[in-house]
Length: 470
Image (cartoon, rainbow, N blue to C red; front, side, top):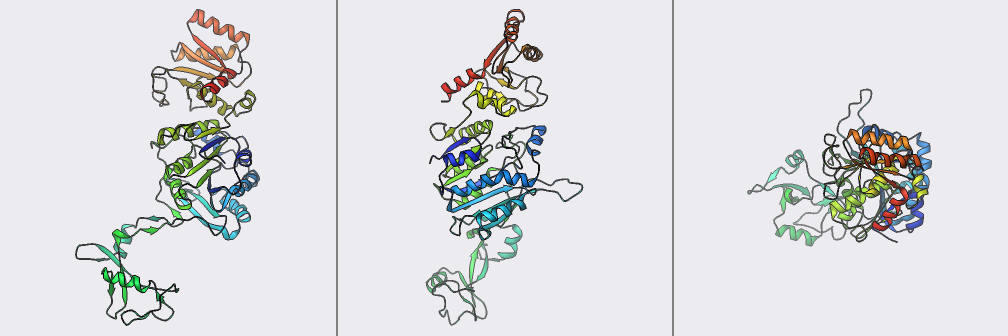
């Protein structure tokens, strides 16, 4: 089974085709709520986020859509593996019942609450500001690394209230336990544990503590152990996570994906439930946060997403943030390869594919885009997406995309208007084909108006991708 790979496709098809049974150590998924089979991924604008978020009917339809996918994910998970399902308050209770049936009620480990946003001003209810992560294991033999968080200042002051002459703060903890474990029933300095209690450490360990000056005796001779604040691991992480903040509007990590999760959230999950070299799978991997966390922590990984745009964003993310090389350190599989596949692609996905295949930067506004679907920069110009203030500044060429077999004369006329408005003399127009009237108008505009409009067919773009991308 290949790892360190991004598959472009519907996970219900990809999983049985490529992923072996009992082969994955950790699965994290963050599925879009109640999406259709061919969901679009939108980037940036609020109107597009609404189109993404509101694509649902009811919880039962959502579960029907998810059920075959969950069955495949359960199949590929190892018996020692862990599974995290990230969702919100709309469906968490429905999803839990489904997962209880699949994994078994006793393999439910945690309902984790993550504060995903700052305070909400919901005037008619309590503000909905958290997500839920449902954590399951396939058996009791799961991989687990206990994680710790820092103590609060209040806890330090209340619990570590003693200090050595040099100022080191410590607390005194009991040296007895409620359950026996090994050599724990001996007499220590004339004392035995109270009835029903046992020494928490072996006699050899107690003698070592004594030599280190870590045992303090009460007036009655009861021993207690010094635990220093600066040597403590911290407080074990609980099931409410409020220390990982959402991605800020201007954060370097932010990619514009509407449901992007912060990298520390995924690093925590990967660290807790896998080992170096293990296989981590995200079957709805969006902009690739899980993949970055897994690669950064030296795990092998597999990502699946239906969106070619998302897959290309992941490629760029792994290249820019981790220095990984496509074709060397990881692979991308099953990007659209035929005209028929591209005809069936959702409109905005096709538009993004065409702009990226041409080497341009997609327009992030899909409504009121003023006839420009993307920008193409000369080789010596920066290729970052323009900001709202300077989106039409600098040296760039406009791109227009039509998902139709024959772009016509009216389409070319509109593109000419957009070019004149932005004072551009060269532009690129992508379609599956062009009518004779469209070609004649392009030739006329070139000859009489000095507009260099370059028609590009989808077939030409596919051939170019095969040569360059492979």
